[in-house]
Each structure stands twice: as structure tokens, then as C-alpha cells.
Image (cartoon, rainbow, N blue to C red; front, side, top):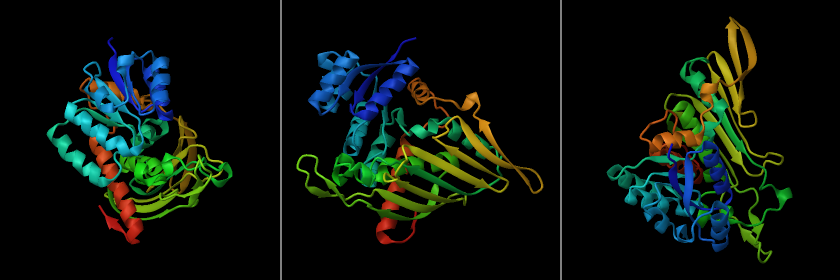
Length: 349
């Protein structure tokens, strides 16, 4: 079976994860790489055995390379839109990291281009491939807990907390990220809500910066952080379900804690990345008698992200794959959260 020839843009930490996932799948071959850092380009090129002529300082050259069949974009947020635009113009299939764009204005500009020049596109909303969430979605769709009335989703990390004394890096730079924790982690929460329940209808929000200054790594001088490191919002979904969301990088002791609790008329589901192969299902077995079970996820829910990407490149439409419009809708909700927080009022979508 032939392999898909991949061009990888962005060679930071997440690039290593994507390379590992591609290797595990076995159907992808990275043939070209791109990064603005000469050191990163040289190191990754040597490690992957990439020819000198396939190491691009400018991502446009990689996208235009006829040997590249599809693009994986793993860059800071401020170049997401430019890379997606170049892929659409070159009619090159792609998978892009979240958030979709820096802001909704960029997203709206890409939509018009996509509608005129659609190509196979996938957003890397990785938690759709957590087995527990796949199984939770199946149970919700089959009505196993009745109509969903409310839910909570939280995504907690601790690396930015005060005890770690993290300096000012690009993730705290508004010009590079657009938003802070909201776009980085909150985009995953928004996608999970859409994956499980459908579209957002109305929301209210609060964004906050817990640590307002961080040290410049070069000078040690304090630099003002202009993006959020805590975000919370409440939402009503189109089906009437009410949701509560919170995310932060300052949860001391939390590594990478993404979890959801779903409350229906006849039962409850708890799912988490901390226990990705099992979920908790509370259900009524007799009138007034509720049983709490921790259940193994069935094999059919153990889909891998790059399995779906391979199917997409072959012309398929895998159930649950996050496509171009999922990225666009996600950015629309992110924009609504920002507007709701700034105006201190609810926003309808």
C-alpha cells in the first residue's frame, strides 16, 4: 500500500506528536518540512532524513512542492490562516492545528475561498479521538441517558501556575495567539461540545488574566500579558442543553486534564482524558434505583486521528472527523466568548 507524501509545517513540540502518530499509522511519509527557525529545520530534517532541497524556510514553497500530496500545519496561531489560504489556493489537502485562525475576521475570509475552491480539510481536534468521548457520543446519540439537559466541560493545565515561574513566551503574546487559554485550550472544549451536542445558540463569558506580568527570558524584566490565562463561559445549545465551561493554565497539579460530565433525563456520563479507555455511566435500572458503572470502551470507539485523515485523503467522509466548517464554527464561538466577556452581556450566535 502506497504512503501519502506529507509536508510538515512547524517543527515545535506538537510536530513531534504528529510525527509519532503518522509513524504509528504507517501510511504517511514526511517528504518536506518547513520552519522559520534554521536550527529546528536542520535538526528535524536530519532526524527525518529530509533532502536539503525539501527543507523550506518559507511554507509557501513547501505547499507548492509537487512532491507534497498533503500538508500538516503545526504552527503558532498567527500563521494558521495564511497556511490554510495557501493550501486552498494550491488545492492541496491539509490538516491544521487549532485554533482555526487568529480571529473570526480571518475565518470569514477563508470561508469564501473554501466555498469556491474546496479541498479535503481536517482540523486537529485531537480529543475527538479519545475513546471515552467517542463512546459518550454514541450513548448520547442513542438516547441512553434520555434528553441531555445540562453538561460541564473543563480543561485544566498547571504549567503556567505561579510556582513554575514560566517566563513570557509566544503563548502569552496577543499578536501571535489572538487569545490565550481560550484559543489554546478553550477551542478544544468548544469542539467537544459541538461533537457531543451540536451547535451553540447563546453564551455569556468571563476572561481573566491571573498572572498579569511574566519575565522577559532575555532581560528578566516584567512584560505585561495581554491575553487570558483563565476563561469561563455558560452556553445554551441549539437543542436546549445548558453547558458550563472553564479552562486555565494555572491549575496547580493538573497536567493535561480534559473532562466532561453529561446529565440527561435518565442518566449521567462522566468522561476524561485521565481515564481515556473507560467512562462512568450512571443509569436508572428500576424506578428510583440508580447504578454507577465504570465501563470499558468498545473497540469500535478506538478510532485514531490519522486513520480518519487517511480516509479523507482517499475521498471518504469519516463520521466524527472535524472538517473545515468545524474549524470555522469553532472560531465563531471563540469570537462570541470574547465579545460576551468584553461587553459583559450574553451573545447569540
